[in-house]
Length: 150
Image (cartoon, rainbow, N blue to C red):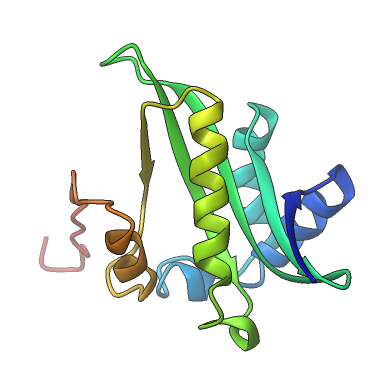
């Protein structure tokens, strides 16, 4: 039976280590795999109250979602953040990402979030799922690769 629950401290460190091995895939090649970088990216959120939801079946980890809440200084309301969603390739297309997303939205609402935001890299197939849940584009990050001609 599949279960979604909050990760404990040991599982959180294990997931952070695993994250270091999937950064390149989840960032569509923008970030090199590195456990050190994963800790630098996500540990500040965890220290500020963010936590992982995990989906497991018979103690086998299938995927995770890192979520947190903070105060939006522009609106004065609490805002939820979906900071990372990952499902192992062999478990994809089985609804695990959807179930994690549903549970995260529910928990963020319970924590008082009025809106929920996430960042998704261009070309990431998960964007279609987010749009099906009602997420819309609110901002675009643009990048210029600077070489010798500048």
